[in-house]
Amino acid sequence: MGRGLIISGGTDGQYQVQLKLHRGRIEALIVALTNQIAMLESAIETMEEGIEKEIAVLKKTALEKRKAYLQGVDVPADPVITAWCADLTEDLAGEVGTIEIPGERKTVNIQPGHGGNASYNAARDGQLQPSVAGMPEGTFYNLALLPGWQKWMPTYRFGTITAIDGDICDIDLEAATSSQQDLDVNQSTRLYGVSIEYMTCNGAAFSEGDGVIIEFEGQDWNSPKVIGFKNNPKPCGWRFHLMRLDGTLVDDSLGADFEVFDSNELPAPLYDVAYDAETETWSFKIGGQQDPDGYWVEYSCPDGITTQYPGQYKLSDKRQAADLIKEGDYSDQIHYFKIHDAEWLPAERKRIAYSPVYGEAHFITTYNETQNTHTKRVLKIESSVQYRITERLRPDLFPKIWEWYYNAYWWEIYNAYAHPEQLTPPPEVRGRRVFLWNNRSETFIMEFHGSLFGEDPDPEYEMQEASYIVEDPSIDGIEHIIEVWSDMPEELYSEGFEDPFTYEGGEINTRFNYWEMVYFIIQFDFEAEE
Image (cartoon, rainbow, N blue to C red; front, side):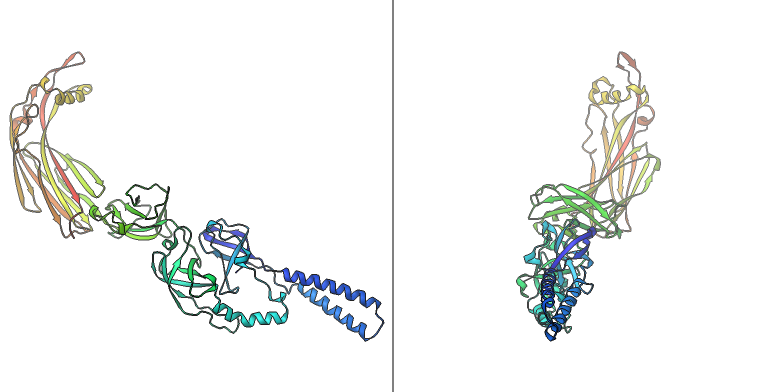
């Protein structure tokens, strides 16, 4: 325990500190010696020559040498040292309390700074005093008792966390010896069930293997608590090291999105989201009133399934009370899920939309088909988890305008839907499509009977759906194949029909035929049992 003055530094909690040694006794001795010398000088001037005068002169000389010694270079100057603050406080200034371990100036740290705690407090911190300030007999007495005081009235020790559960940890103590006779001053080598008091997050900032500072409250070996780090103190806040399960580090080049929900499942505001390349960790802070029960934290990345700590990717497994966490360091893995458009026949006709959403991924495609065309769709799915794939196939007919004016085009399409009575109904349409799911060797034949406007299609002309679980996924990929053969009437594609209508006071002649459109709607979810 001691007194120091911040000279510079603060980055990462490291400072240059001048130790302020207690010089009051030295100064008082110098004043007392000065007075004694002055008194002897006055006495010597009135003395007659002889043995008494010679003794007085010798006494005066001894006092002058003692005074010179105390004023001279033999008295240690206030040293400037490098010291770590016990917590991550980077803006300390002025006088601070210091921690000497193991009770003498071998290694010096600064008291935890959070909440102004590091400011010098004479009752708590005391002040180191040079041994030269004491009388010889007093100095000997203190040095003789030092090892016993260090062992049986301990102040602080260094140790390493070997196990941690919330705000409680077990610690292996560093060896501690006294400068006097190198005596062991630890009462044991391990401490169990030690509480942690640190900034705003206590044990959340610590992990197994961290070097820590232990304070013994009341200088009682049976009342230890962790108050900070030996060096490189960690901040409170949220830090996550994330890996995607194909072996990819989730860094700032890949990108990550975070969402946090309080214990009432309400979203919490985040700020200062950042990535540290040196530690390979993401960090952020949560605004507003802190939830004492903790938070659910979710994260996602490209080609990853939204995951809630710890590793929960299924909607049914999320929002469990046991998964609420508080500020600290965490590591987790984001499950991998990627869709490749491996093959499309014919390639020039494809239209694709892909949208990953909360808890599942949709892959929706649209194909513009011509008569009697064979359509083949191959998806390659790379995944680290089982998934359910639901495939939906829906054919449709749309008008295609052969002759039109650009400005009237979209109005005409709208009018065809909103005012079908203005258009000549198209002829009856009959056709057949054959759908083959190669993965399951299933075939569906769909009959169509109906028209585009004014009449609903037959019940047979409904969306076809099939669903199954992929039980053996692979990050190298599994192919899913869908093929369609169409047998729609030739006249729909070649003849068409004419239909004039009025637009902005003028008559526009148009010619219609049809595009046949096949929708592939492929949905994935991850609720399948493992």
